[in-house]
Length: 106
Image (cartoon, rainbow, N blue to C red; front, side):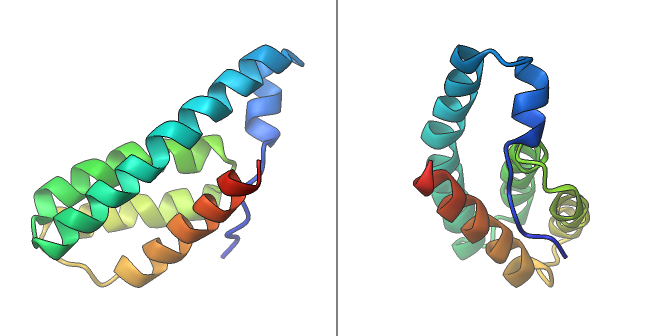
């Protein structure tokens, strides 16, 4: 599975508008760590319905960062969480770590 985030989609959306790209990245960088922290809290509390909701929010960021295969994984994981399952948790954590590392370097 490709875990490499990229800026291709943001570049495509922006049509070369650097200000737009900077704004998108700024939003990602400010919201993502908060969402990850909240996700981890809901998992620790075994509040899987709430976990599914935060995964739903995060999967849009996965898509924006061009991680199509990871997006499919997030969709599957969201369904699992809604039925009280967490078997994809470790794989999803790898996606989150990959995204965090990528955003930290920008």
